[in-house]
Length: 392
Image (tube, rainbow, N blue to C red; front, side):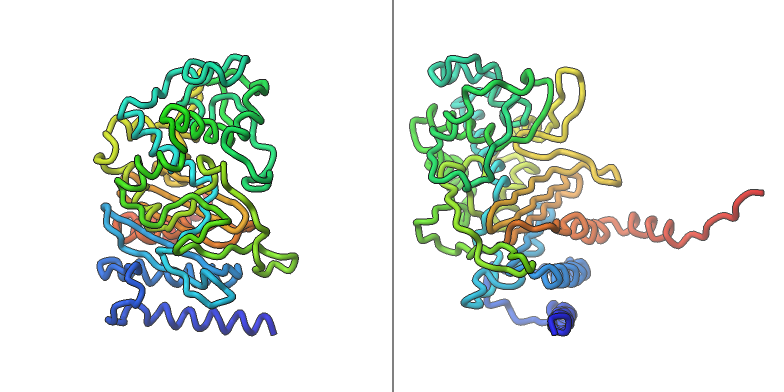
Protein backbone atom coordinates (compact mmCIF):
# COMPACT_ATOMS: atom_id res chain seq x y z
CA UNK A 1 0.00 0.00 0.00
CA UNK A 2 2.84 2.34 0.92
CA UNK A 3 4.61 1.55 -2.37
CA UNK A 4 1.45 2.26 -4.37
CA UNK A 5 1.08 5.62 -2.65
CA UNK A 6 4.70 6.48 -3.42
CA UNK A 7 4.33 5.65 -7.12
CA UNK A 8 1.11 7.66 -7.29
CA UNK A 9 2.91 10.70 -5.81
CA UNK A 10 5.76 10.26 -8.29
CA UNK A 11 3.36 10.09 -11.21
CA UNK A 12 1.60 13.27 -10.12
CA UNK A 13 4.94 15.05 -9.75
CA UNK A 14 6.13 14.00 -13.21
CA UNK A 15 2.87 15.19 -14.77
CA UNK A 16 3.19 18.51 -12.95
CA UNK A 17 6.81 18.90 -14.10
CA UNK A 18 5.77 18.42 -17.71
CA UNK A 19 3.03 21.06 -17.58
CA UNK A 20 4.34 23.48 -14.96
CA UNK A 21 6.44 25.72 -17.18
CA UNK A 22 3.94 25.82 -20.02
CA UNK A 23 1.46 27.59 -17.78
CA UNK A 24 1.44 31.36 -18.47
CA UNK A 25 -0.47 32.25 -15.32
CA UNK A 26 1.63 34.13 -12.79
CA UNK A 27 2.21 32.09 -9.58
CA UNK A 28 0.14 33.17 -6.60
CA UNK A 29 3.33 33.22 -4.52
CA UNK A 30 5.24 36.27 -5.76
CA UNK A 31 8.55 34.91 -4.44
CA UNK A 32 8.42 32.06 -6.98
CA UNK A 33 10.71 32.64 -9.98
CA UNK A 34 10.90 30.58 -13.18
CA UNK A 35 12.99 32.10 -15.95
CA UNK A 36 11.80 31.25 -19.46
CA UNK A 37 15.39 31.67 -20.66
CA UNK A 38 16.31 28.51 -18.76
CA UNK A 39 13.08 26.60 -19.41
CA UNK A 40 14.85 23.39 -20.48
CA UNK A 41 17.06 23.39 -17.38
CA UNK A 42 14.10 24.17 -15.13
CA UNK A 43 12.11 21.20 -16.41
CA UNK A 44 15.03 18.87 -15.67
CA UNK A 45 15.54 20.44 -12.25
CA UNK A 46 11.85 20.11 -11.33
CA UNK A 47 11.82 16.46 -12.34
CA UNK A 48 14.92 15.67 -10.30
CA UNK A 49 13.82 17.59 -7.21
CA UNK A 50 10.24 16.32 -7.33
CA UNK A 51 11.37 12.71 -7.39
CA UNK A 52 14.10 13.37 -4.80
CA UNK A 53 11.65 14.99 -2.36
CA UNK A 54 9.10 12.22 -2.76
CA UNK A 55 11.32 9.15 -2.39
CA UNK A 56 13.04 10.67 0.67
CA UNK A 57 9.76 11.74 2.36
CA UNK A 58 10.95 15.33 2.74
CA UNK A 59 8.18 17.49 4.27
CA UNK A 60 9.33 20.74 2.66
CA UNK A 61 12.20 21.66 0.36
CA UNK A 62 13.09 25.00 -1.22
CA UNK A 63 15.57 25.98 -3.91
CA UNK A 64 16.88 29.20 -5.42
CA UNK A 65 19.27 29.47 -8.38
CA UNK A 66 21.02 32.62 -9.53
CA UNK A 67 23.03 33.13 -12.72
CA UNK A 68 24.82 36.43 -13.41
CA UNK A 69 23.30 37.86 -10.22
CA UNK A 70 19.74 37.22 -11.47
CA UNK A 71 17.32 34.70 -9.97
CA UNK A 72 16.36 32.13 -12.59
CA UNK A 73 14.62 29.72 -10.23
CA UNK A 74 13.02 30.04 -6.81
CA UNK A 75 10.39 27.57 -5.68
CA UNK A 76 9.33 25.11 -3.02
CA UNK A 77 8.23 21.49 -2.82
CA UNK A 78 5.95 20.02 -0.18
CA UNK A 79 4.86 21.75 3.02
CA UNK A 80 6.43 24.14 5.49
CA UNK A 81 3.73 22.99 7.91
CA UNK A 82 2.55 19.41 7.35
CA UNK A 83 -0.22 19.70 9.91
CA UNK A 84 -1.85 22.70 8.22
CA UNK A 85 -0.76 21.69 4.68
CA UNK A 86 0.94 25.06 4.19
CA UNK A 87 2.71 25.06 0.82
CA UNK A 88 6.45 25.61 1.04
CA UNK A 89 7.61 28.95 -0.34
CA UNK A 90 11.14 30.11 -1.28
CA UNK A 91 10.53 33.01 1.11
CA UNK A 92 10.09 30.70 4.12
CA UNK A 93 12.75 30.76 6.82
CA UNK A 94 14.49 27.43 7.48
CA UNK A 95 17.11 26.46 10.05
CA UNK A 96 20.40 26.67 8.18
CA UNK A 97 22.72 25.16 10.81
CA UNK A 98 26.42 25.72 10.10
CA UNK A 99 25.61 27.82 7.02
CA UNK A 100 25.16 30.48 9.73
CA UNK A 101 28.96 30.72 9.57
CA UNK A 102 28.48 32.61 6.30
CA UNK A 103 26.36 35.21 8.13
CA UNK A 104 29.22 35.66 10.61
CA UNK A 105 31.84 35.66 7.83
CA UNK A 106 30.20 38.46 5.85
CA UNK A 107 29.59 40.49 9.00
CA UNK A 108 33.22 40.09 10.11
CA UNK A 109 34.49 40.91 6.61
CA UNK A 110 32.48 44.15 6.52
CA UNK A 111 33.65 45.14 10.01
CA UNK A 112 37.21 44.46 8.85
CA UNK A 113 36.74 46.88 5.94
CA UNK A 114 35.32 49.47 8.36
CA UNK A 115 38.41 49.17 10.56
CA UNK A 116 36.41 47.66 13.43
CA UNK A 117 38.03 44.22 13.31
CA UNK A 118 41.61 43.07 12.70
CA UNK A 119 41.77 39.66 11.07
CA UNK A 120 45.46 38.93 11.79
CA UNK A 121 45.61 40.27 15.34
CA UNK A 122 46.04 37.59 18.04
CA UNK A 123 42.84 37.10 20.01
CA UNK A 124 44.85 37.49 23.24
CA UNK A 125 45.49 41.14 22.25
CA UNK A 126 41.84 41.77 21.39
CA UNK A 127 40.49 40.18 24.60
CA UNK A 128 43.36 40.19 27.12
CA UNK A 129 41.06 39.38 30.06
CA UNK A 130 39.38 36.43 28.38
CA UNK A 131 41.80 33.74 29.56
CA UNK A 132 45.04 33.49 31.52
CA UNK A 133 46.24 30.94 28.98
CA UNK A 134 47.88 32.19 25.76
CA UNK A 135 45.48 32.64 22.85
CA UNK A 136 47.97 32.70 19.96
CA UNK A 137 45.42 32.32 17.16
CA UNK A 138 43.92 35.14 15.09
CA UNK A 139 40.36 35.80 13.94
CA UNK A 140 41.42 34.69 10.46
CA UNK A 141 42.62 31.35 11.86
CA UNK A 142 39.33 30.95 13.74
CA UNK A 143 37.42 31.55 10.51
CA UNK A 144 39.53 29.08 8.50
CA UNK A 145 39.28 26.40 11.22
CA UNK A 146 43.06 26.42 11.70
CA UNK A 147 43.18 27.77 15.26
CA UNK A 148 43.74 24.45 17.06
CA UNK A 149 40.45 24.66 18.98
CA UNK A 150 38.69 21.40 19.70
CA UNK A 151 35.35 20.45 18.16
CA UNK A 152 32.08 21.07 20.01
CA UNK A 153 30.91 18.39 22.47
CA UNK A 154 27.18 18.63 21.77
CA UNK A 155 25.15 19.19 18.58
CA UNK A 156 23.93 22.78 18.22
CA UNK A 157 21.00 23.51 20.51
CA UNK A 158 21.39 20.31 22.55
CA UNK A 159 23.41 21.77 25.41
CA UNK A 160 20.48 23.49 27.08
CA UNK A 161 19.96 27.24 27.38
CA UNK A 162 23.26 28.98 26.78
CA UNK A 163 24.52 32.50 26.32
CA UNK A 164 27.37 33.35 24.00
CA UNK A 165 29.72 34.21 26.87
CA UNK A 166 29.02 30.93 28.71
CA UNK A 167 29.68 28.96 25.51
CA UNK A 168 33.04 30.69 25.10
CA UNK A 169 33.96 30.14 28.75
CA UNK A 170 33.29 26.42 28.32
CA UNK A 171 36.26 25.96 25.97
CA UNK A 172 38.51 29.02 26.12
CA UNK A 173 40.80 27.53 28.80
CA UNK A 174 41.20 24.15 27.04
CA UNK A 175 44.52 23.08 25.56
CA UNK A 176 44.82 23.47 21.81
CA UNK A 177 44.86 20.31 19.70
CA UNK A 178 47.68 21.62 17.54
CA UNK A 179 49.74 24.76 16.98
CA UNK A 180 47.61 27.39 15.20
CA UNK A 181 48.19 27.37 11.47
CA UNK A 182 49.63 23.85 11.31
CA UNK A 183 46.37 21.96 10.70
CA UNK A 184 42.63 22.32 10.18
CA UNK A 185 39.58 20.97 12.01
CA UNK A 186 36.04 22.21 11.50
CA UNK A 187 34.65 23.46 14.78
CA UNK A 188 31.64 25.61 15.56
CA UNK A 189 33.49 26.94 18.61
CA UNK A 190 35.75 29.08 16.43
CA UNK A 191 32.74 30.93 15.06
CA UNK A 192 31.17 31.18 18.51
CA UNK A 193 34.35 32.97 19.55
CA UNK A 194 34.27 35.26 16.49
CA UNK A 195 30.70 36.16 17.45
CA UNK A 196 31.84 36.90 21.00
CA UNK A 197 34.68 39.11 19.74
CA UNK A 198 32.29 41.03 17.47
CA UNK A 199 29.91 41.49 20.39
CA UNK A 200 32.64 42.73 22.75
CA UNK A 201 34.47 45.02 20.32
CA UNK A 202 31.21 46.62 19.12
CA UNK A 203 29.69 46.81 22.61
CA UNK A 204 26.39 45.44 21.32
CA UNK A 205 24.70 42.07 20.99
CA UNK A 206 26.09 40.00 18.13
CA UNK A 207 22.67 39.70 16.48
CA UNK A 208 22.22 43.50 16.59
CA UNK A 209 25.58 43.99 14.90
CA UNK A 210 24.63 41.46 12.20
CA UNK A 211 21.33 43.27 11.65
CA UNK A 212 23.00 46.66 11.16
CA UNK A 213 26.06 45.44 9.27
CA UNK A 214 24.68 42.73 6.99
CA UNK A 215 20.92 42.16 7.05
CA UNK A 216 19.76 45.76 6.63
CA UNK A 217 22.29 46.78 3.91
CA UNK A 218 21.60 43.63 1.83
CA UNK A 219 17.83 43.80 2.48
CA UNK A 220 17.74 40.21 3.71
CA UNK A 221 14.04 40.19 4.55
CA UNK A 222 13.92 36.55 5.61
CA UNK A 223 17.09 36.17 7.66
CA UNK A 224 16.86 36.19 11.46
CA UNK A 225 18.26 34.48 14.56
CA UNK A 226 16.14 31.53 15.64
CA UNK A 227 14.30 31.88 18.94
CA UNK A 228 11.86 29.20 20.05
CA UNK A 229 10.01 31.71 22.24
CA UNK A 230 9.40 34.30 19.52
CA UNK A 231 6.79 34.42 16.80
CA UNK A 232 8.82 34.77 13.60
CA UNK A 233 7.11 35.57 10.32
CA UNK A 234 7.58 32.96 7.55
CA UNK A 235 9.34 30.49 9.86
CA UNK A 236 8.82 26.89 8.80
CA UNK A 237 7.88 24.10 11.16
CA UNK A 238 10.65 21.58 11.87
CA UNK A 239 10.72 17.81 11.46
CA UNK A 240 13.00 14.81 11.90
CA UNK A 241 12.75 11.19 10.78
CA UNK A 242 11.33 8.65 13.23
CA UNK A 243 12.44 5.01 13.53
CA UNK A 244 10.34 4.14 10.46
CA UNK A 245 12.08 6.86 8.40
CA UNK A 246 8.87 8.92 8.38
CA UNK A 247 8.70 12.66 9.15
CA UNK A 248 7.67 13.57 12.67
CA UNK A 249 7.87 16.71 14.76
CA UNK A 250 11.48 17.60 15.59
CA UNK A 251 12.69 17.52 19.18
CA UNK A 252 12.69 21.10 20.52
CA UNK A 253 16.11 22.76 20.64
CA UNK A 254 17.25 26.20 21.77
CA UNK A 255 19.78 27.84 19.46
CA UNK A 256 20.08 31.10 21.38
CA UNK A 257 23.76 31.79 21.94
CA UNK A 258 24.73 29.72 18.88
CA UNK A 259 23.77 32.33 16.29
CA UNK A 260 27.35 32.89 15.10
CA UNK A 261 27.91 29.22 14.27
CA UNK A 262 24.56 27.49 13.75
CA UNK A 263 21.62 29.55 15.00
CA UNK A 264 20.20 31.52 12.07
CA UNK A 265 17.04 31.10 10.04
CA UNK A 266 17.19 32.04 6.38
CA UNK A 267 15.32 31.69 3.10
CA UNK A 268 17.04 30.28 0.03
CA UNK A 269 16.53 33.62 -1.74
CA UNK A 270 18.50 35.42 0.98
CA UNK A 271 21.20 32.74 0.88
CA UNK A 272 21.63 33.34 -2.85
CA UNK A 273 21.94 37.08 -2.17
CA UNK A 274 24.73 36.37 0.30
CA UNK A 275 26.38 34.02 -2.17
CA UNK A 276 26.45 36.75 -4.80
CA UNK A 277 28.31 39.12 -2.46
CA UNK A 278 31.32 36.82 -3.01
CA UNK A 279 31.05 37.08 -6.79
CA UNK A 280 30.49 40.79 -7.25
CA UNK A 281 32.32 43.63 -5.45
CA UNK A 282 29.94 46.10 -3.90
CA UNK A 283 29.00 45.05 -0.42
CA UNK A 284 32.64 43.94 -0.04
CA UNK A 285 35.76 45.07 -1.86
CA UNK A 286 37.41 42.62 -4.26
CA UNK A 287 40.47 42.22 -2.05
CA UNK A 288 38.23 41.26 0.88
CA UNK A 289 36.36 38.75 -1.28
CA UNK A 290 39.70 37.26 -2.32
CA UNK A 291 40.72 36.95 1.32
CA UNK A 292 37.65 34.99 2.46
CA UNK A 293 37.45 32.76 -0.64
CA UNK A 294 41.14 31.83 -0.68
CA UNK A 295 41.79 28.34 0.74
CA UNK A 296 43.89 28.37 3.89
CA UNK A 297 47.46 27.11 3.47
CA UNK A 298 49.07 25.51 6.52
CA UNK A 299 52.58 26.34 7.70
CA UNK A 300 53.82 23.17 6.00
CA UNK A 301 52.44 24.38 2.66
CA UNK A 302 49.37 22.13 2.45
CA UNK A 303 46.24 23.65 0.92
CA UNK A 304 43.15 23.02 3.05
CA UNK A 305 39.53 22.83 1.90
CA UNK A 306 38.53 25.82 4.02
CA UNK A 307 38.38 29.48 3.19
CA UNK A 308 37.01 31.88 5.80
CA UNK A 309 33.63 30.35 6.70
CA UNK A 310 33.49 28.48 3.39
CA UNK A 311 34.50 25.20 1.82
CA UNK A 312 36.74 26.00 -1.17
CA UNK A 313 37.45 23.05 -3.43
CA UNK A 314 37.30 21.63 -6.96
CA UNK A 315 34.67 19.30 -8.37
CA UNK A 316 35.38 16.10 -10.30
CA UNK A 317 35.92 18.10 -13.49
CA UNK A 318 38.42 20.42 -11.83
CA UNK A 319 36.10 23.42 -11.57
CA UNK A 320 36.53 25.61 -8.46
CA UNK A 321 33.51 25.96 -6.21
CA UNK A 322 32.69 27.56 -2.87
CA UNK A 323 30.21 25.88 -0.59
CA UNK A 324 28.72 25.49 2.84
CA UNK A 325 26.62 22.78 4.44
CA UNK A 326 24.43 23.01 7.52
CA UNK A 327 22.68 20.30 9.51
CA UNK A 328 20.74 20.82 12.72
CA UNK A 329 17.61 19.42 14.36
CA UNK A 330 14.75 20.19 11.99
CA UNK A 331 16.84 21.57 9.15
CA UNK A 332 19.33 20.78 6.42
CA UNK A 333 20.83 23.37 4.04
CA UNK A 334 23.44 23.57 1.30
CA UNK A 335 24.92 26.50 -0.60
CA UNK A 336 26.98 26.01 -3.76
CA UNK A 337 28.79 28.72 -5.74
CA UNK A 338 30.61 28.33 -9.05
CA UNK A 339 32.54 31.60 -9.48
CA UNK A 340 33.50 30.96 -13.11
CA UNK A 341 29.86 30.57 -14.17
CA UNK A 342 28.55 33.17 -11.71
CA UNK A 343 26.20 30.40 -10.57
CA UNK A 344 24.76 30.28 -7.04
CA UNK A 345 22.45 27.52 -5.76
CA UNK A 346 20.84 27.34 -2.33
CA UNK A 347 18.72 24.43 -1.10
CA UNK A 348 17.02 24.08 2.27
CA UNK A 349 14.66 21.60 3.91
CA UNK A 350 12.73 21.53 7.17
CA UNK A 351 13.91 18.08 8.23
CA UNK A 352 17.12 17.04 9.96
CA UNK A 353 18.92 13.83 10.93
CA UNK A 354 18.94 12.84 7.26
CA UNK A 355 21.12 10.17 5.64
CA UNK A 356 20.87 11.73 2.16
CA UNK A 357 22.58 14.73 0.58
CA UNK A 358 20.91 17.30 -1.65
CA UNK A 359 21.54 16.74 -5.39
CA UNK A 360 23.02 20.24 -5.52
CA UNK A 361 25.90 19.32 -7.84
CA UNK A 362 23.48 17.56 -10.21
CA UNK A 363 21.29 20.68 -10.29
CA UNK A 364 24.39 22.78 -10.97
CA UNK A 365 25.34 20.46 -13.83
CA UNK A 366 21.89 20.85 -15.41
CA UNK A 367 22.30 24.62 -15.65
CA UNK A 368 25.97 24.37 -16.64
CA UNK A 369 25.00 22.13 -19.56
CA UNK A 370 22.79 24.92 -20.87
CA UNK A 371 25.47 27.54 -20.19
CA UNK A 372 28.11 25.41 -21.94
CA UNK A 373 26.41 23.26 -24.59
CA UNK A 374 29.79 22.46 -26.15
CA UNK A 375 30.89 20.80 -22.91
CA UNK A 376 27.74 18.70 -22.75
CA UNK A 377 28.25 17.61 -26.36
CA UNK A 378 31.82 16.61 -25.59
CA UNK A 379 30.73 14.53 -22.59
CA UNK A 380 27.99 12.81 -24.60
CA UNK A 381 30.45 12.11 -27.39
CA UNK A 382 32.76 10.42 -24.90
CA UNK A 383 29.90 8.33 -23.51
CA UNK A 384 28.76 7.08 -26.91
CA UNK A 385 32.22 6.67 -28.45
CA UNK A 386 32.81 2.95 -29.24
CA UNK A 387 35.58 1.32 -27.29
CA UNK A 388 38.69 0.34 -29.17
CA UNK A 389 39.32 -3.34 -29.66
CA UNK A 390 42.07 -4.64 -27.34
CA UNK A 391 45.45 -4.95 -28.97
CA UNK A 392 46.70 -8.47 -29.61
